[in-house]
Length: 108
Image (cartoon, rainbow, N blue to C red; front, side, top):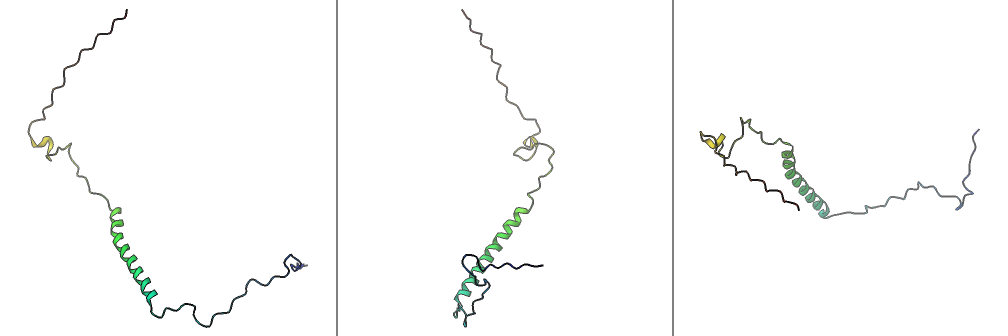
């Protein structure tokens, strides 16, 4: 058994349906007979496309790997060959003489 609930006694009285559709206007609301609006939008689109085409190579280069490092036998100096290309080992500077410790102060 179905029961029916009436909402006519709520404050504000009966309400009109919310799905009313306004009538369509007889003529278009906006007409650009000269085509300037379309031309501006097209120019803006071309500028965005060109900017995107300029950015794509930079984004693609960021995904590429860096330069490969050659496998070297050991440390290489500025000259490009071990020991700078000389046949003799490098000469080390002499270390300074050890310092003698200071005597401890005498307490009285």
